[in-house]
Every structure is written in structure tokens, then in C-alpha cells.
Image 1 (cartoon, rainbow, N blue to C red):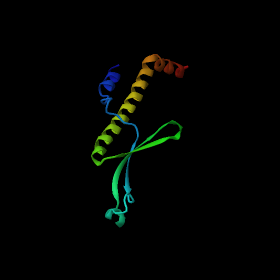
Image 2 (image 1 turned 60 degrees about the horizontal axis):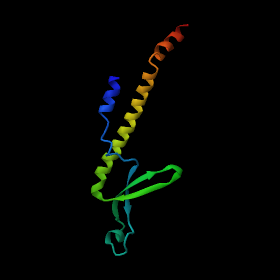
Image 3 (image 1 turned 180 degrees about the vertical axis):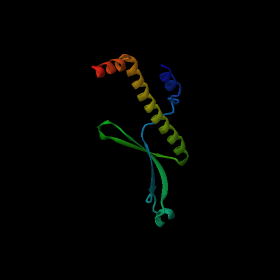
Image 4 (image 1 turned 90 degrees about the horizontal axis):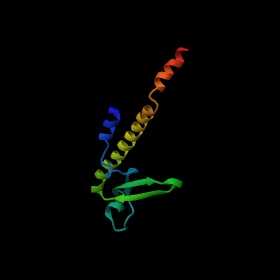
Length: 109
């Protein structure tokens, strides 16, 4: 129970979570009059990609200053997901506390 309570206490702020992947892209053809695009250098941009059931994908272009916040929210989502899985495993053990003892008895027979 103490391990589970520690995991619950360490959960990230649930309002600051985001599912998806952050990609970095270079756009080279956004305007004909752009010197950077004409030279082939292009513009770096961050894109959040989110997959949905049925194979549907949504991409959101982000302003540069949003990328650090999005990275933090994505990390919070992963931490939350890992914590939930760990809590579920501990709850499975709590539902069957005698299973470990019963398993050791079966081996001795």
C-alpha cells in the first residue's frame, strides 16, 4: 500500500498532459519571395502529431516558444501513463495477496 501511495503522490499535474509526438520540420516553400526558402535554407518549425483510432492523424504547427511547454506536457503524459501502469500492477497484487504463497506451495509438491 505504501508503494502505491507514493506513486499516487508523485503523479504529475493532470491538467498539463499531452498525448502525441513532437517533430521538428524544415519548411522551404512557404512564399516565393522568401530569401531563406529560395536559398534552400528554409525555416525550422515544431509540429505536434497526434494519432487517433482508425488511422487518423492530426498535425498542429506550433510557435517556437510553445515547444518547451509541449515537451514538458508530453513528458508528463508519459510519466502519468507509466505511473498508472505501475499502480495497476500493485492493485493486481493487492487483489490476490495469497497468490505468491500459493505459488510457492505448488512448487514444493
